[in-house]
Length: 175
Image (tube, rainbow, N blue to C red):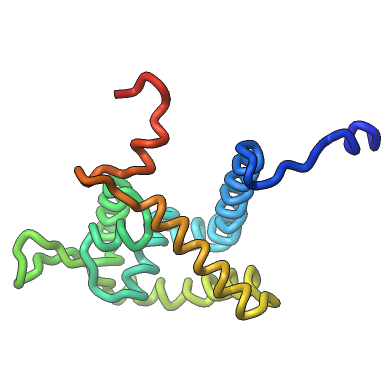
């Protein structure tokens, strides 16, 4: 077995297969980050991951529109719409027409939503503290800058407003 392992060449990130490995580690990181949510919060508070994301975003940002929350969280508009409907049905947010722009719907936490936000915020902070504890400030700044660059790349649009990411990653034969 050791002989077979020694024959394996470690791929660098500049090689296509090395980049795929980096992508898989990013996906694994995302999945691992969800474990505390599903273990400690989802069942206890009867809340889905997208509902949790929106509730926490509204708690942090204050009153927001659905499209602003979609942009902030990276959750697609259809999933945001479903989560908004559920949060509203459960009395966790209100949806009101913005008097300054009648087409804009403003989402606000209700007292129940604020209660849940206050209960879940320490769990969110504990996840961040656990993950990032012991990292040097310079490393955290570098990580944050890299994450910002990756997000900007994923959110880039072409001249027609289409996602460059979606357009450039279409399978062959898709129109």
